[in-house]
Length: 306
Ligand code: GLU
Image (cartoon, rainbow, N blue to C red; front, side):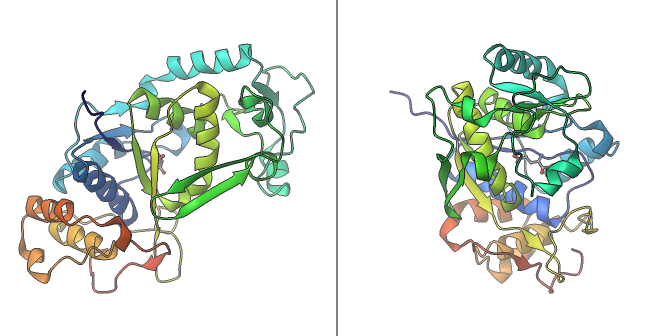
């Protein structure tokens, strides 16, 4: 009998070039897939044009190549998948699993981020409305509102959220007509046959939503590994918003070594002089998830270029 192959992925949004935080996610997902003798795919999540920075998809791909992170198969661009997303949305509408909602962002903020179902029974139309998943109708069996959706993360351990008070009805298509991240990510993880998701812990909170959607659509649930976030010396997540520096070209070997060090994989000093390929291979051979800490750490001060 043929053994099913592991498939991992890196799914950047083209909102700017890679920085140290995104390199950690890319490198961890690559090494984890290769450690399992699997494939590693890259998916560009380019379905939010207002946030997109022109040229960054190509820049990210070039940075991945320079760091020796070579993907299998073709890069998947989510902008080419809109028909599939809309078809699936239509079938969710046919099965009355979604409803139109006119609430604005301020109202959601005032609710603490978990939607209270205000528009669920208003029978609103599409005009200027978002489409939300009715979480209590997402599962075919009638689930009590108190049911929890949980999973065991390879690093973070057990994590669950209660259906209505923790997850709440969430947006699948935005008021501006754009497909929401939660829907696209679930459809494409299934479409690409992803068996292991390795990504930053900022998305831990999204995982119960994604598992619920997978169950709603009859999809497989991949295995999840959330890597703690790299933070700056002020304790802020490294992101474009906190002005994380772009990885400097020409420092790829150093970047990889520091990333392995940050992941507490204990790379030897001599490895700093090795080639990109040798560093990556060392990382695969010595990959040890149990050494990765569960909490945030500042990016090591010994680096000058990060
Ligand atoms: N596109 C998302 C981001 O750049 C990541 C999606 C994912 O890994 O699930 O933050």
